[in-house]
Image (cartoon, rainbow, N blue to C red):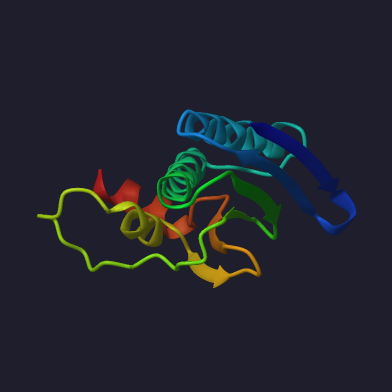
Length: 155
């Protein structure tokens, strides 16, 4: 099942796309939707999206949709919103149980998804919904200027 709806609210400077995904093969579609959305944000709306942001948002979406598929029955809903120079990814699923945030452990096999997401995102929140839960993350669309300077100094 794949549903897609796009709302463009240019007057308020926000862009949104939502889709429902069911089944593990849909994780690839979630990444593609993310890539297409951010490409449109840049090409059609003139907002800068760095290569790092493009890859990092896809990684975060992939991890969140994977977790929703793995731990919750039925579809999950992915919503991407761009406003104020950042992209927010929100993933809703039907399981009300909040995920266990495990401490970093390089010897543990698996269960590093949320650890990765928390490490690469600027914000991370989980909230219970009347049905299920919603995980939200946000990332800047442009690289931090200091990161660019640090890269040049290191070479």
